[in-house]
Image 1: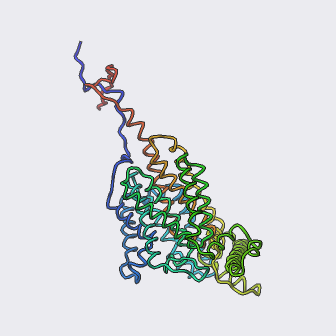
Image 2: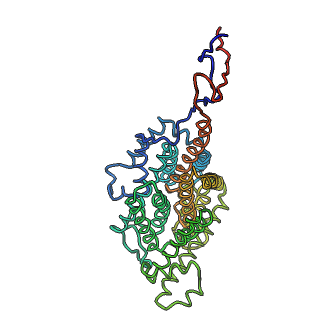
Image 3: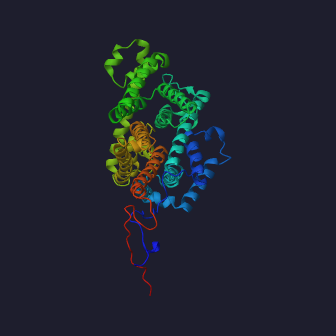
Length: 472
């Protein structure tokens, strides 16, 4: 009997070669470092104080560098194939197609170039340059640091607005109280993610605990009723989806917030928040000096409702292409003049109605589809991972992204910032996270199937002959 030749045998336990790189591998490429720095500057808006004249062009340099790296690495095209990317592209394409039908074509072209197209590219940078779980962890820290930077700048440069002593960021993007509160709350879940990460050092966790507490205090001082509603919705979401320990933490945080109200909020801010739950009956029950604040808040609410009605009216007259990107105020002024009314020259304080009125129903449908795919992708990841002991970090990160996206959605119903950078950043993060988690789960069975091979034999020591390679 001829001796066995190990070269003619293979083990059944030899796993097929994994084509994709290990998503858990710690990779910190130049492309990702550029992206992390760019996202920090973008979300913190610290660039508005570092380079308030724009002479350094740091944002342009960062965006161009990241874009080149995303294209060269293939990440840009990978992001394009995601469902979130496809629907965002569809919405953008419709905005461009509808531009010639705008009530002011030149204004729409300028607005697209200066706002949405920049935000649209941000999605591809984030989705294309984040390729591993360690990079996801680092990006979480970058966003948490940006939140801390906002808190610091608000304490240094912030000031009270004339309306009921509401706190603002002092100027720039966060010169509006509602915008400041929105970005703080969008970044807050990332701070909580770092706090709850047991692999991080105690000083780091304590630092971000202080940042989170300060962010909540600053957010409360903005007097943003939309932000307060977002906090309530997210607290309910976490209480519903999280485990027993997290539920206790939510209850403790709510109680701490309620206890701190007398020490943090002025009487005017308390009155303003109460108008979210009461109307004229509340105003009648207040003291004379508080009725002014309540009346101002209710008048603001009524004005917003009128603008929302105007947006719906304009969308009925321009259902396909809208009145033109960024042209709601112009179209509403024209409508007011036709009806013999005074023009308000205000934006509609609802991001989704703004897209409907300015860009048409197809653009809104595509945008909502992008949001829907992002939301349910991270919702699906959390539902599958939170009961798996080996995927607890994935579950925590999914809950972080889910909470932040929920905050953005709720606040956007009270904000005119339909074309800002928050959703492209979150959507890009979720698209990359979804790819990474899917790749990790598909790779795990291949790695676990591998077993030791002894001299060409399978683990049960039964040789298996394979046919020799065909030769011509």
